[in-house]
Image (tube, rainbow, N blue to C red; front, side, top):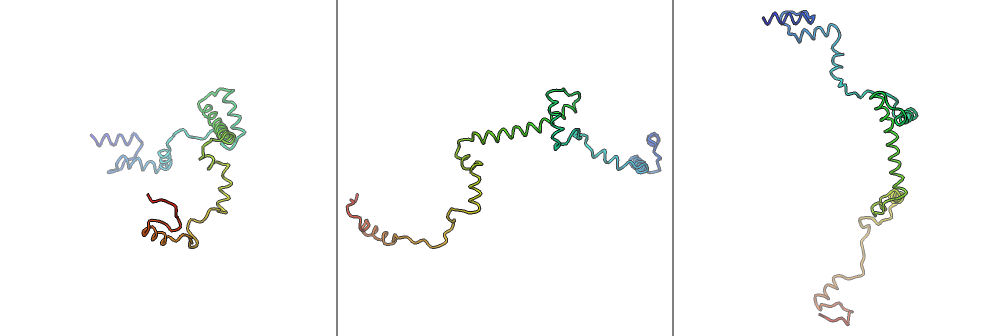
Length: 172
C-alpha cells in the first residue's frame, strides 16, 4: 500500500521514480534537470521584508524637496507614496533639528564650567596647546635645589624643640 501511494505521489508531481530513490532525491533530480535549483536557493535566501528602494536617492535633494512639500499639500494615495513622503521629509527635518540645536548652543551656551572649558569656543586653545605645550613637564628634567637645610632643622627640633633664630615665641 505504501509503495503504491509513493509511486502515485511521484507520478502526480511528474517525477520519474527509479527503484530505491527517495522522493527528495527525485525532486532534486527534477530540479537539476530543469535548472531550478539556483533560483530556488535565491528565493529561500530572500526574506521579503519590504525594504525595496523606491523614489529618489537620498542625495537627490531637489526631488526629495518636491516630495517633502507634497507631504503638506497633497495626500498620499498609497502606502508607498506616504512612506516616500515621510522618508523625504525626514532628510530635511533631521538637518533642521541639528542646525537649530547647534545655533541655539552657539547663541545661548550653557553657563556650566564644563561647557566653558570644553565647549567649541575653547577648541582653538586646545589645538594651540597640543602643538606647543606651555605647562611644565610631568617629570623633572634636573635636580631640585632647595635653600632649606632639612636635616639641620630636624636636629634642632629634636634637641631644643625650637628652630634657631626664632626668639620671642612662647612654648605651650
